[in-house]
Amino acid sequence: MITITLGTIPYPFNRAVTWLSILLKRDIISEPVFIQYGASDISVVAKHPLVTATPILQSYELMKMVDDSRLVISHAGQGSTRALAKRGACFVLLPRLRRYGEHIDDHQLSFAQSVEKFGISYCLSLEELEQFILQPPPAFQNQLFDGPKLADHLLKVYPESTGSSNGSCVSSDWWN
Image 1: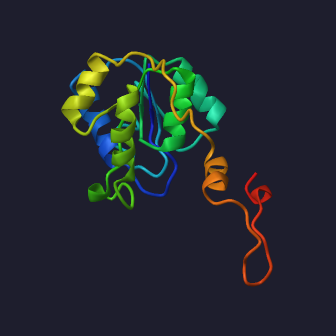
Image 2 (image 1 turned 180 degrees about the vertical axis):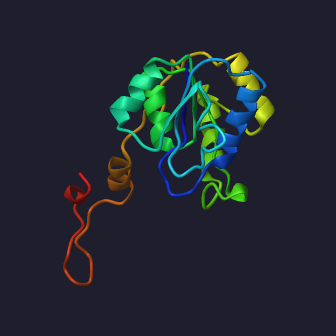
Image 3 (image 1 turned 90 degrees about the vertical axis):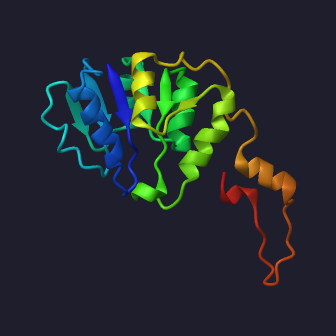
């Protein structure tokens, strides 16, 4: 089985759905596909006998699908990437791109490029995606995001102070 997760933000990721449709028509994909599609239009694949689809599901349900999959194709969101890496999943990232109206900017592309050095694959073309389906990357076995939490890092860089003009103070309890 192949699991595809496109995220839940209010921007459609129709390019990914179109590519799925093409890969199914070409018989590149000939196994069951589960797709979590969010705001995307899945009409081109909705009635395909190999496709099961839902707009949103609980993270534990998604992780069950991941565990049952030989390959996961995921948008390049940091939370999804972290969860897949922690799970040791076999996955490839498909970044949402601004030029297609899939997000407000290209931060997913920048993120995918930055995690490539940890052994996480990403693709930008249908041909690249086809190759990952035919020859999936190995299951992820490295550490990702093994550094401090952002709040801990910020406290070190910007120590707490009570120097505001109205006498209020910023406390680490606010975000813990």
